[in-house]
Amino acid sequence: MTGSKTTLRVLLDAGVPASVGRAFIDAGHFVIYHNDVLAEKTPDDVVCAAALSNNAILVAVDGDMKQFAKQYGGQSARGKRFANLSIIRLRCNEVLASKRISQAMSLIEHEWDFSILKKARRMWVDIAAHSILTNR
Image (cartoon, rainbow, N blue to C red):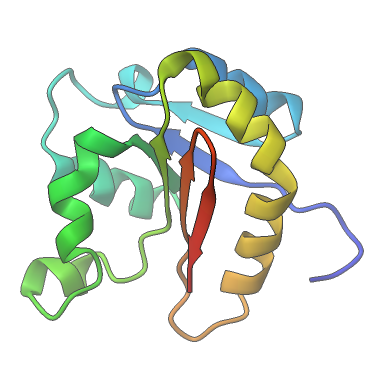
C-alpha cells in the first residue's frame, strides 16, 4: 500500500461483458479477454489455471463459477491448487456490470493492495446490483 497507483491484471471469463474490460482499461489496468487466450467452453479449472499462470485476477459471472467458488481454497486437492486464485464475481446483470465495476474500482484496488501483503495472497470480491462483499 504505497503511494504509487496499483496496476491490476485481470482475466475476463467467457460470460463477462467486454464493457467490464473497458472499465478496467479506463482505470489504467491490464485486461486479458477470454476469447484472446482460451477456447470457447473451456472448463473452469483451465480458466482458473490460466488466471494464475498470468498473475491475473479472474473476473467471472456469478452463475458461471458458482460451483467452483464453493470449493475455492478448500481442503480438496482442487481447492489447494487454486488457493491463491484471486476472483471478482459479478452477481449483477450485464447492463450494470461495467458501471458496478467502475463504482467499486477503488475498493478492488485497495483489496488487491491488502491481499498482496498477506501470506495467503488472494482476493475475493462479490459485486451485486446493491452490494459489494469482500472475503478476506
